[in-house]
Picture 1 (cartoon, rainbow, N blue to C red):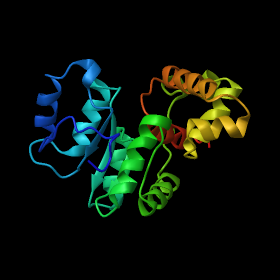
Picture 2 (picture 1 turned 45 degrees about the vertical axis):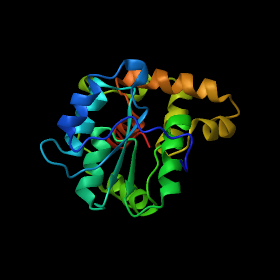
Picture 3 (picture 1 turned 180 degrees about the vertical axis):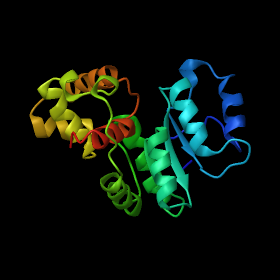
Amino acid sequence: MPYQDIHLVFEASNGEEFFDKLKYIPKADLPQVVLMDIEMPVLDGIATISSASIKYPEIKHIVLTIYADDDKIFEAIKAGASGYLLKEDKAINIVEAISNVVEFDGIPMSPAIARRAMELLREAPKPVVPVQNNPTESQLSDREMEILKEVVKGYNHQEIAEKLFISPNTVRTHVNNIYKKLHLNSRSQIMNLAYKNKWI
């Protein structure tokens, strides 16, 4: 086997089959990362990621598709995808993306997708939301806001630690606190919220 660190848990042809198979897997044996296509019959990839992010928050999802259009990218990010790759990417890049998500909680994207995603976030309208119904900066400490900004820029725990002269474990603790305070469960949701509220 060319990639010894990668173990295939199972394959599914659509979202419904995906959830059916997850039911019979002990929690300790759940896959760490799922490569999710977008266009699937019965239950598509976007809807599957959205539901799975709530039911199985410990599982990371990387979109692996042929689609590079704006709507698909933005919907995948909003649904909770931890990465967005194109099927034309080399196998080694896909393996590295899986490792990045598992080891560093990164947000791997194909270069073209990353550029377009940043453009979409900049262009997205920023609705005015009543403060009482929306998480605010005041919920986070100065250090947490500092780390949140680095997360949104795409830096992983190790890179943030080196930049701020703290340990990766300290970064991980702050990121977990950010998740809890803002009631989020993925880096992509943090990115979306940060841009929507003009924290960046």
